[in-house]
Image 1: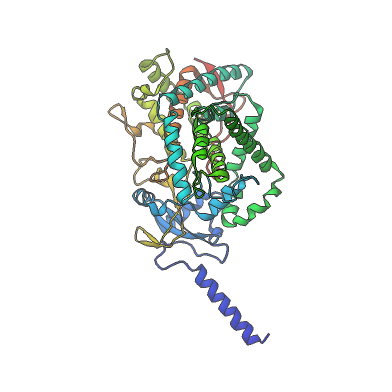
Image 2: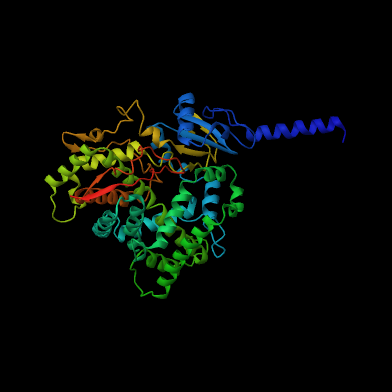
Length: 494
């Protein structure tokens, strides 16, 4: 090839790539991006610290490329509310839908990765979300049936912890997971697990390992095609997927075989909806409907238990490290509710400090520290900046709930910040479940679980540091979402 022609060709290719990778004019300020990799050289294993550094340098709204994807991070509360209430920002990033939809897929699934509720977009998300929300409401979420189900799980856990405490120190995190998912699982499937079932514990450990594998998730987000070589993990994730998906499949098959013509639980209702659907484009039709059903079950099974279990683990870690606060909460419960029947949601107004303690845990740990990312369908503006269609948008929840210009001494643990004139007062900037159209559908369930498990366990037991195993500092561990450091605790009957 003539050298001049070759040189001209390279210039042309370089110019094309520059135009493709150049961020639009008036895009939010941020670090310089590299071709293909974007600005990932500005992000470390500790994504929280990376975002804090970038925010301090570029402001409350900053932009960068993560791989090929233009990305905006919002650290301002009012901007976050405005953006996430906008239907234009209700999509999930395409790469996230592809990665999360395919990681747990099986050959018999519908081929589209756009499935379920959490990671889907468009018509499928809208159809599935409306149906699941309606049915969860009918089967008890937010109503007395939910409270009865959670209370039953609390009583089962109390018996198990009493037995555990005789043997020695207790690892609370593992115990919480199965108890918590049983609350919603009974409503979803009409069944529940044995709290000591080794299969369920192995599945949860696999899910937890996957959730904390932030390096893996980060790589998939930049290079989604790498999911096709996931087998290099040595089969651990594939084994977890097989166990979980087989469990979902068996439950659905049993419901189909034992159908009685009426809706006993959410799975029954979904199967009825599938049988009535003749529109081939519907997300409830045929193979597509079955795939969405199992994906929804998977999301409720995994995502529903882990954040609440993590929050409760932090609650009892803080309690054990602060005996005076623990006794203050116990005294409030003892004086205002007593030791008779189980504490119920009707008692929440009688226990303002107990409620404030839980909310301060949610604020200071901010385990879902950057939320689940959104994407805009069309070109838009965020604040004064232009944002092209297909931009990933993160809400920097950790900063919003620890903003020193709003919260007094934000890194100090102060439950009293939610108390006024002896009453609990929620702050609008406490948004652990996010805001807007894609606010967590499990929020009511999570709030019920956290209050009932926490208050009833504090009334039953005293939680203290073991002389043989020191408690860790309550600093969240980094992951796709943040986790509570593992610890062992001494439990004694009151």
